[in-house]
Image 1 (cartoon, protein in one colour):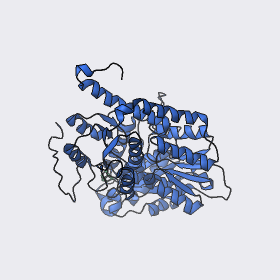
Image 2 (cartoon, helix red, strand yellow):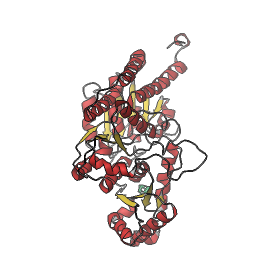
Image 3 (cartoon, rainbow, N blue to C red):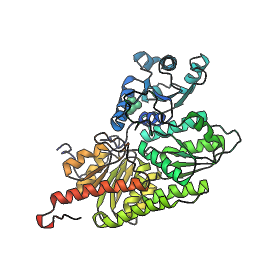
Length: 460
Ligand code: SF4
């Protein structure tokens, strides 16, 4: 019993988080940078931070994650990391030859006040940035926000550094992908191709973190948003951001600097959020929805209808990133499941507002919280007070699942004890079918394992 000390008695906590439902900002900055072709993420801080962030991404994606570090020592911690970073920029372009270095800060470099903009400029002035090569940066102090904030900051950094409005509008639509799997980004592109809407997806980790095994290591895999496409985003017809937390700042930046109007929708997870993605593409691209997509939606509806009796009324606990939790909650409510406990370590007022909209009438008993103290410990305490039928969230839920014997569907970052998320989408109608299949499998497996002999059914 790994969590045997968890009690159902909830005491007010002010400065203590136990088993946080988030990780630190630079992990998100690193992931976003990997979604740009030929880009090497660089961690401006100590080696330990960089190793941790790389290892989390490697464990989740089961792929080698390349990143460099300023390797702070005691000296840089006291006198500042400028000389380390200037030296690092020179070494990286000389040895690893990326097209772009995407620098993010860490707790330490932020605390001592290193100015990434000024240091990058200094490196350029000293000739450490070769012609045709670039350095971008994002401030990602981990004592505020979460990995989601870090992702958003780095996406904004790419827009700030590269997007240009030349005055020649194109018909392309910018799609800012929130933090989803490479498989989901591939699915977003597949749906836009079916719609015949030309999009620029930023970032795009497909063919980077789900790259095929060729027997040869590629330092910079073939995937990732191309630099020229990011530049062209400034001329696009419109921007569609997917996920408020991950894309809002970048969309605003693009509108402010390049006058590209934007719309933000939820990530296309579940039926109604995918409807909104398809409708947004249809509206912005001025195209109609093809029959093949309508058929995909119909198959999802058919699956929900066929298996509704196993879903209705089931109590579910969820945790993870707000951009995923909001459409997921909507999807579960649509299937008449009961998302009763929801936590996210990522702060942001919109979370509580959206959850109230989705749940206050339909599931009045639901409890939800984000930001400070919205952690896995609180989630477990709620579960101790009254149990649930299903857990949905990242790998860290396996302790609760094991201790309390609750079926568990892994979803979100990090998922480090199962595979499949990189290859099979959760986004789109087909992704919703996969998610539904996973939910049904764990619920029916439990029923098969625990029901009395006379209720054991071959056909379900
Ligand atoms: S929380 Fe701060 S110090 Fe710790 S790994 Fe993250 S960036 Fe580094």
